[in-house]
Image 1 (cartoon, rainbow, N blue to C red):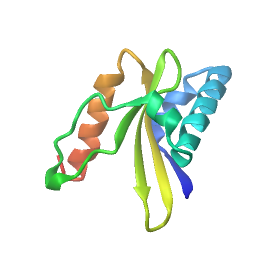
Image 2 (cartoon, helix red, strand yellow):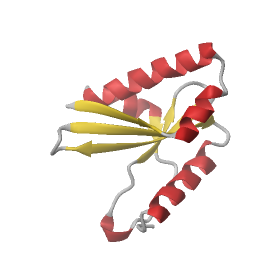
Image 3 (cartoon, one colour):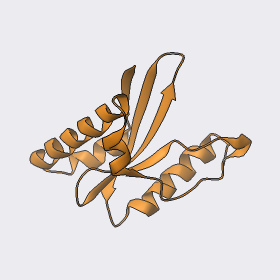
Length: 119
């Protein structure tokens, strides 16, 4: 199975606000968590949560997660498995302070799912 990254402009902007040392540290944690998606998902499961359940149309389930990358920061990301192309897509939407994480998670989900017409 292959891992594919999709990094959004807001995520890039959030990362750009950090020092280079902090960006490197967060990048290393992203590598650990993302690799675990291919290898049993232990690190991913230990560092991710779903703080809000979106009521999606058609029985669809949200693939949005809140991922802990360090003591102070969280990433809003989507994880989508595609068995036909044998890949997992990891979309990084936002990097935010842990105190704002649940609200931003909900905002991102509402924006994405509303645009798709499934909320």
